[in-house]
View 1 (tube, rainbow, N blue to C red):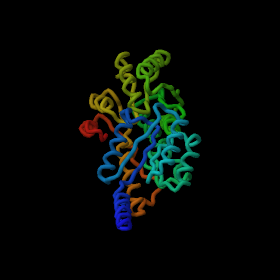
View 2 (view 1 turned 180 degrees about the horizontal axis):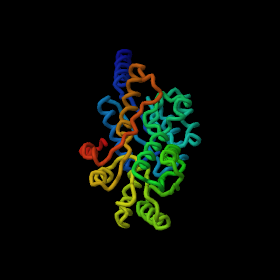
View 3 (view 1 turned 90 degrees about the horizontal axis):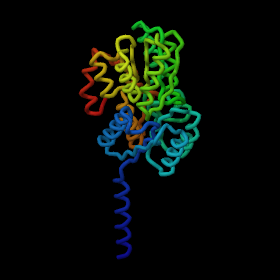
Length: 308
């Protein structure tokens, strides 16, 4: 009887193990409360539902590379079936990511880190190449007649954002200032760009690197009567950005389709775990694409659904 009971117990344990869902941890430098990252998280959650897996989203409370490295190590210690990471600072995060790879955990990177992912042993990177995207923004600004511009960076030290600013000025063909601001301080962003415009009255172009900075900058432009004299563009989408584009208050937004950046790594890692399948390309590009007044209305409904 004891032998039969033990066999039954082992059978139950084996069945439970077989039915245990695949567990994938996402460690991002951006918080899910941010308009941009909330859409990426929506993509990851949709993929989890479709693939029947468990996804855990983790991020530091602020742009903190020490804390992010700790989160990656903690994720590795919990032995997930897959790990998704962003790499805004390769110097700060490479060691933790290397430890994950050496531990035998399949790793996919998203959003930032296209230049280092393959060297770290990451299976594939999902995102856009930031420097060429910045060049595209600069060329578009130049075609609009911009001769003096400022790039507003809410996370100085984030390699991807730094590359956007560099590409922007290279594409514009003129040197310009990078104005550092704090992501969590919209009032401070508005005051900073207002003071900058007062000090630099000939400025006729502004680029922000995300919707959290775009909204207060738009407010400052409206308050100072600069909407017609200053061309304004941003990276990434939000309801505020789309409404401004539809109303002709902004020149363009660069869309990197962050929903796909959250969605695709989960699908890829699930199929890798189940079948050993993985794309042969080291990078899957999700951007850049330009959204303007002409096509903004087409994506408004999707933005309301948390997809764009």
